[in-house]
Amino acid sequence: MRTAIWESTAASASDELLTTGEAARILNTSRQHVVDLCERGDLPYLTTGTHRRVRRADVEAVRTRTERLTRDQLRSLWIGHAVAGRLVADPEVVVERARANLARLEDGSVRGQAVRWLEEWAKLLDGPVEPILEALTSRAPRFRELRQNSPFAGVLDDDERREVLAACSRVRHLGAG
Image (cartoon, rainbow, N blue to C red):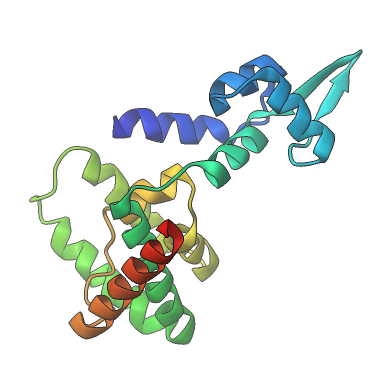
């Protein structure tokens, strides 16, 4: 399952052009809805003759904007935002904590797909801060999976973590009523 998500999100970065019918299948909607998205300006498109073509990356962006998160994904997103706040305030300390956590995880106890995600975190931690912030706060499927294997344990203390999760729960219940 995670491999399929990884491969589909890696493919989504391409400039591959799709028909409105292909886009509709990805979005699990009608072709007419895709046409409507194009006409409203919500989905950029090109024309070839009289036919619309949309970039796969743009279709994936629309899909991730409208796809509902699971409870665990929403909670990890809220935690990600809180960690991102810490990262902005003190990048050196937060990145160093994450690197230390990664080193402990890479001792051989991690197996399967988690290894792939930890390798991706290692690459992100060796680069600029902005892509790390994106990984912590994006709703895109790739980053949802990445956050499930986060090396940022200990950046928030137990009380802060509880407060963030309680706030997430309160807001979820407000939206449900």
